[in-house]
Length: 511
Image (cartoon, rainbow, N blue to C red):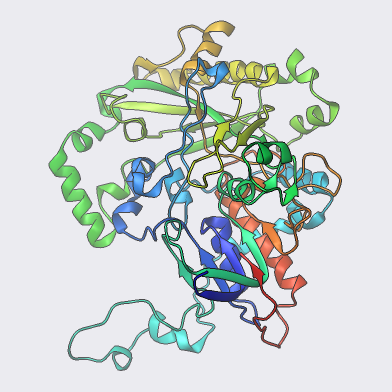
């Protein structure tokens, strides 16, 4: 065994949940020693954070694991892109959409797991904390960085640029650790997996925590038989609609058709973060809706009464329409002319239940991802009805007046035509949840309790989107932050991290 390092808390995964968890632990009064591990790189290269190019960052193989699903039976055998981040901050490759949504989602979460910690009202302080930028300099040592004077940095010679060593002294960050070995990290208190909806179940299964028969078939020693690990996968689906527009409706051709103009814009962005790349492909409009036809459908009536009731609640939408996404960046080569408008049609509250499985005992091999898209009768009916609703929007006179021709649309508006369009075109929104589901003790489909503790394993928790018990009617950046912040609150309370006494680093458990 190589040398060892000992920490109070070790967090695996530096996405929104892991980062929020780490910083809130490190800033608690007792200043515990927290290690944040990330398999990817820092990602602070400014060229990776260009506003107008956030739609195609996922095409960069250095920051994307590059996963694909297994061939999907109900999608004409297609393998669906299942991109997952491999970079500090993570959500940067999933378009950075920030939407809170929806009261009933959080209240239902609390009901399912039997813990008011997740109720909408209890979430509000966390939302406010996340959305608040406070310019007050609370720590005097930070004043020289936030409001520097010449006495702080001198008036002659070179000006040193770097990160202040005083900041977050108790929060080391280790990057690119996936390929490294030889240094064993141990936690005296807890290990928390925050490796993402597909990463955390992989670590559990590789470690012998999961369905015993699956592990034994691969000669992996069973540490804890947890049948639910890898089961219950849910995800949002979408299809794009695209229409060619009149030339006077936008000036994208002049920009995207001129490589020199784009190069000049990039130079300006790298200099000060302004210019055309802060405008083009930066405006989107999103709305959430219910479908009257879906509410009246036999497929909805066939669902359990509790699910029917939930889908009828005031703040629970059936679908989202997101307009102005730049398809020429997301799917290079598909759209030849830049004078177009694209509208994404997103299905909410899908009822399918997929799974992930190990394909071997080699930790370097990715999981087999089988979301089982379009396998549930309700999902199939919902896809037909919400696409029909979306097409009605495009027929409105205010939309039609600037439309030249359809570019990506269904072959017909019959049920068969609409559903065939989904089968040929559907994509994942990468909103994967539920594979290490939170629940009550005794729930057959649960792997962790409401305080993020893995059943049957001491001092191990999971705090990322894999624990969410059901799909949320939104994009998942905000809920990911909420999970990290909520887990931090739990740990601060359990370990009394706001007491006056500083914590020690004794009594280790292996990582």
